[in-house]
Amino acid sequence: MNQRDEQEFAEYFAAKRDSVRRTAYMLCGDWHRADDLAQTAFVALHRRWKKIRERAATDAYVRKTLVRAAIDESRRPWRREWQTEELPEPPQDGFDLGEQVVTREDLLAALREVPPKQRAVLVLRFFEGLDVGAAAKALGCSEGNIKSQTARGLANLRQVMEKEEVARDGRE
Image 1 (cartoon, rainbow, N blue to C red):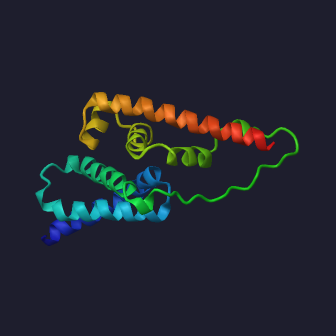
Image 2 (spheres, rainbow, N blue to C red):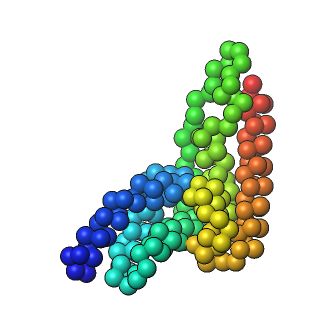
Image 3 (cartoon, rainbow, N blue to C red):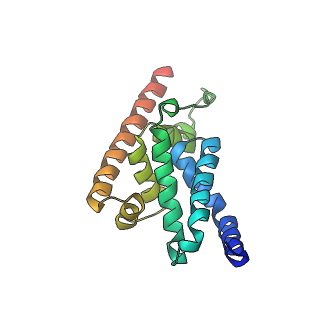
């Protein structure tokens, strides 16, 4: 790569690294793995930087690489167990509005229980804000597949959250 290409890549990396890392975290639920996934995506992008003619498609390329890496990584047998941090119990004295609202931690914990492809679709659709067509392009599948994976993913997410709510109510 020539110096101009290296400079363009460095600028792109500096502008996008935090958002790619956050997306990776939403896909895997672990900051260390998110760093690895983001690095994988940027290394792949760096290898192909000279061949990318349409710079507007760069975000889509990185997103697709990131999602594929997360799904591939989740298929490895040693990655099937999720490491979760135990959260302290909420105070039991009186009404706590926090118990009535789903916290970010609860949502992320529930998202970890959703199968990888469904999780990827949910992250792309609702965290990244992609429409059905863009999510289908990012994952290399049909729009119908995205719609069905979204429906299944949301159903699984609801089921996990309801299970957690029942478990939480049983502890009280």
